[in-house]
Image (cartoon, rainbow over all chains, first blue to last red; front, side, top):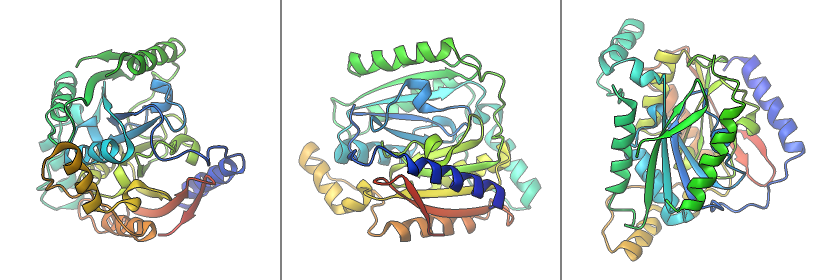
Amino acid sequence: MPINVLHDLLDANEHYSETFAWGELTREPRRGYAVVTCMDARIVPTQMLGIAYGDANVLRNAGAVVTEDILRSLIVSHHLLGTNQALVVGHTDCGLQAFSDQQIADRIEAELGVSVPTRFLAFEDVDASVVGSVTRIRGCELLPRTYSASGFVYDVRTGRLRQVA
Amino acid sequence: MPINVLHDLLDANEHYSETFAWGELTREPRRGYAVVTCMDARIVPTQMLGIAYGDANVLRNAGAVVTEDILRSLIVSHHLLGTNQALVVGHTDCGLQAFSDQQIADRIEAELGVSVPTRFLAFEDVDASVVGSVTRIRGCELLPRTYSASGFVYDVRTGRLRQVA
């Protein structure tokens, strides 16, 4: 890792730890919910949703797609940490909506000269993608019937959420 | 989802969007790095590492374990969004260190009465888990040789990072 970025991050952590005031919190989210959203650099979940320290589990991957790994994490979040609800938050201008799986594979092959078996979970319609993700959570047999899920699309231009599921 | 939590989150978003000032950012992280960390409620990546708006892709799952889904996300982050480095940040007092896969399976079976085929990726040693995750990134053939990865353990009692890879 280039020294400048790593140095800056560790320097920021040094300052952070000097006034750190959250050492007494336990691992169970105080408000009992989980958020699944995208890795996008323009999403700051704490600010987007007003999440306070220790309130919620936050899960993020490319696309806010509910994969097997996200389901594993939600199952752990419920059964070990007591969460009972999830919000899935996709967003406008997502890289996985702008490019298709084939276009991503072509880019990788052009840069690295390797053939690409992986699927990248690109989607054409963010609303439909979020609805599909919420449906997968609702159908997960390792979560109880009382577990609830809802879905939203975040507009990166306005900062506003719109409910879609 | 219980109305009180959802109401509070949407109310917070309403206030947030009223003064939203980041609508001009593009999807490419400005500082070209990604962070992989745990969903734990006590981790706030922006504060832990001083990440500014639009700087970095942030990926989170149960345990900060680099799974196939995390690799998919890092590959998308590099090839579509231009990131060239990743930090993996595990943490002390993680639920996946406190419980074994078998204990998690037993809890689920006790609550839901279903048998559990899923593996939960519990680990015994957080340092070794982070080192393993960094090794998986370094060995990923869909990332270039110039891509760099480093690993840290975050102490939830002190707010401090310790480098392990």
